[in-house]
Image (cartoon, one colour):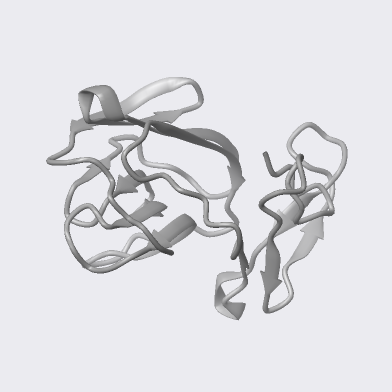
Length: 162
């Protein structure tokens, strides 16, 4: 669990992040208190969790985020607002990307992806959940507690590095 409330450390001090290109914090956070991490795309700001490897291969997982975007892009062919990624290689089911693509929630394994239907807007908070159920090979994306889309994947996520 990463609160990003003035820290890049996770709750258990196992998967701590390292800021790239000087991410900052903005107050208040979603609940009106604390702070939230502020990443500027034009400055290529991000957070890297290098070690230990967070293994999502061949298992079910859920990643939830609260997101407030000052800008969401919608261009042809596409523009991404990245949230989380694990790149192994550009091969089916080996590149995990959890993003907003053309203003829609998006969970991808590289060529085996689910795209939400709701068009998201800049300037408001969203609670988003990205879920993969390994037992039924199904990807789900939720926006503000409501199922936005689902997809039965061709295979499980198989990334071994990233």
